[in-house]
Length: 330
Image (cartoon, rainbow, N blue to C red; front, side, top):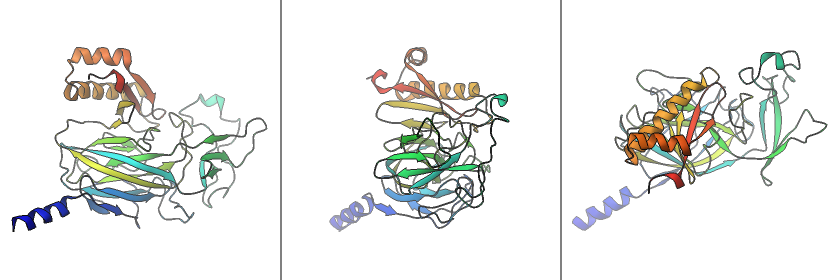
């Protein structure tokens, strides 16, 4: 009997792989959205995201703009006060086109530098029927490049290597707040951080049982700060695993990769002063170094002061603070 019990336990505890495709996409990080699936810590999920306008890998309209989300995924054992660590083991483009805005946003440039120079509008239906303010980018999946389809520059072919990322990764926000998929905050959300890429681990605080993890808004490429208000928006194949970190003391999103630990001052993009986001990111990093790396507060301040690097995550939105792993206490 004991042998049978141990065998049953081993079979039920062993991590599983789930292939999950949503048929309904949500536009909010709301705990009232019904779970797409329940998964155990350590399980692998193979899924897809659709683009920010709601178009899937075949070009079919599958969700509503903006930023329709795949999820939520209920993580068994995740409780308020914990954190979940989402590791993206595979993040690949699955479509040969994307789109962007056709000029810098007014949040990124002095208004007199752009208003009147050329219109925000481009062509009605140039990419999808309902839009007149976006331009198409061709994606060469084999070569791993993307090129602006039109208009054509006389002096630059505007072709670049792709760098796939997810703009939206977040959990259901605290309390009864159900923020839209257009903003970000301590729960993650539409962070649009270009380091949320294959190989990265995103760490998020948990506010509701199961955490309720959402993701979407794939980009083939995006510069620091997202100064046009878009990446090269496209659909994506995504594989991820999740672990639960009990009572982890995480108050804002964090990111871990092979080179850095990163604290993110996640705030609503295009509406927040960067000095506030910088303070949030810096405070989160101090707490991280003191709690997890056992540094004295003064030593954490010195490490940040002389080894830290700041990223503009979104213009007039979020900031991030990176510490090289090579500089961390052994």
